[in-house]
Length: 459
Image (tube, rainbow, N blue to C red):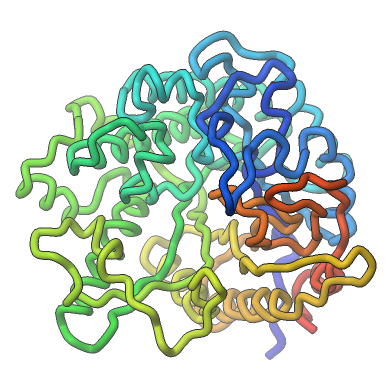
């Protein structure tokens, strides 16, 4: 039986504002934590990146040429609200309004992400970011205003990029709490505060904007046990429970995992859970569950120190998987992991699934003349799209789209331009901005052909 992809399937590109826009001191933008981070030997500063602020029309034309019909981008909180909790900056809001109109004019559906690691600097310095409930309130105020301004043209929304990262050590860096003590109390408070913020925004959308949709989003790296030893299997299951199912339970059922809450009680963790929070979380639902997927992990329980919280197992025990190939940053290439995640998420929750980041980072250089032959990227996306189709047509999962990550080259979240994900080369290095010329790679033409056929033929 020949299976055809749904006619309304979304194909597109995902990015963040700080990795694309530049223009850090233009248009009334106030500073974010990224704006004060200096360049290093292996990273750029964040002043220009790929200059999307001035070049978005050119890049949208490339997306249209690739036959994309969705673009997930981020609104920079510090560009539209002075210092995060001050006056709304109309010049910044107008910038995003023009972007939205430009996308719609090209037949590209916008999806907005409201936060992607770039805390307004003033809120980080004064409140330690999401460690303080004032910042929760400021985020909800900003988010609800963006929904009000753009809800007539933007149907699809997410709040936090890779929300489960706020339940790992990276939380302090991405939540604007770099000066805070790295304790379990603080980690669980940051996570709970961000989930409350998401719930407030989701509830507002579902109560007041019936035509809009919002879903939760995770960074999902399937974790395999290193061996068939029961302790490895237990460790892998607990990683899944704490870092994935805990959030998915909240997004769909409005409550945290029973196992996680039992751990909180047994360990005496203060996660700043107030009685009134039950009502906010309890109302929360998701129209779909979205996630990023790049690689899988492997946990060896023998390497986990006694007394380690499951949140930190992979800090100590993430072992190389000898059965998989990796890129130079040791990110494994595992299409089957994507199928497994999609299928088990849909089977467990019965909510449509939406992979909104997928891709491979690879070191590339352009000689100024010849097309970059990125066959490794073509193979990566072909194999992962096929795995997604297997989840749909063999396992029965409902999937509503597939978005690649940074399909026009952008610096990694650490600022490294050497780790390229794009199907379009951007002519700059970490140290030299150069001319920022956009140059399609071999994969650009492959993706264009695949999407012209709605993904039915992967060539």
